[in-house]
Length: 597
Image 1: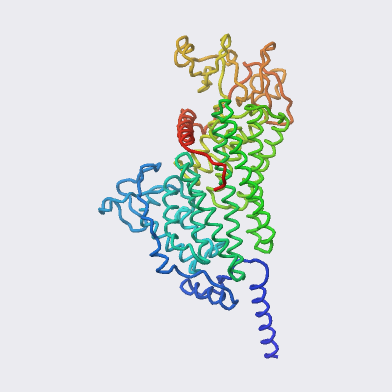
Image 2: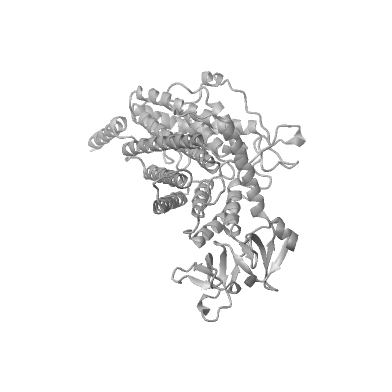
């Protein structure tokens, strides 16, 4: 009986080994928590299982030769562009030293840490991330959802708050990540360097206005490096580990093409907004458009091929590929939407308003799906807010460079609910100075204040002025005069009765004091037009069961919200204008080529 049982187990083990070496692509063998006796023995367990399966094992510690091959100097650390400066008594959470200890290296952070947490020296963090990354690659360290190929995670997000790094801090850390893998350009371990360069491109994209030329250079290096790495894996004896590395390299290629298409799309958007009608400008935009479409289609092609070879992977990875497909479709729909608008307003074209609206609705639906997929999968808090912000901006008609499209068909209160959710949750999760919270503030401010404007009745020039507040005790709007003629006539501000103010289309309002239509009192809606003959506003309501109605200005009050801050919209618009100007200056200095990098 004992011999039969032993023989049966041996056959099962041989069958499993055969499946791992010749079967479909699967994650590389890795010790589970039940078989991992301790962290110190984890690498030994993983390597032993790999050898038993007859597979090449690239998950070994970095060699001395690879360390000596690093030629780039360490990144010079400066907190000049960081949103906050370290207090005098702050210390590095790694070395526990600060200015008071004679350490003059800048203490920096740009994540979701608050108080005295999260401050570190770039040199200390680089050493920490290098060791942590090495432990993940070799299998000494493992967490839920983590494989050998998760070795880039320490460089991407803070070990304390678990949120992505941001701003120039993120770029400097990514540069150190790239530098630490310079020696890994040969053999199966080239994947580590590809991952580092890919993260460098993503980090630069987050600060695009400042690094236009560098982004082009890094993408060129990334595409070349991926091609070289593909050749390495193609000429290696196929097994489960190699196949898994090759498939993961394919995922990086999809991201690279998609991100580069996004980069070119932003340049196309900026060129469109600065379009003055010349043929040379038109030809340049057309070249950018085709370049963007080419990379977008390449991303889709690689993705579809990759998805067909990875169907036997775990369900989480399949879900990630599904989300990536939604993202690629949304990118394609957004480009089509953008190009249709360009032809309609720039050069004659055959795109109708109906087609433009259909493409916008398709883009919005895909962006909504992408946001909800990431939210349901809980792929990082910052990532969810990033996709939510993108969906919200397109929902309310904000372009990449903070201009507004036609928002006639926008569901204003769907946008308002999402804007408030993003604003409050980003403040709680990421903190008040995080870039994504600032983006949420801008989106909310744009939605509630952009159209909260009014025209003083009797003004022959019909000049609109911002309504800065509502004085409920005296039932008056306070309008801030922006036109010099109005300032000379009324001063910087003026209080006006609501019945003497004609509101801007898109303003968020509620109905009050209605007698014949009492059911509409306190119902929220937005201004959709004005009837000059009847001197009434056309109001569409948040409640879809209510029909639109013509309402006198005296029976309408604009809405204000507790989450608003004084003058934040003006400050954010000024900051956005500065960013757009910097991007335009960089765009004018750059030369364009039609060739793929």
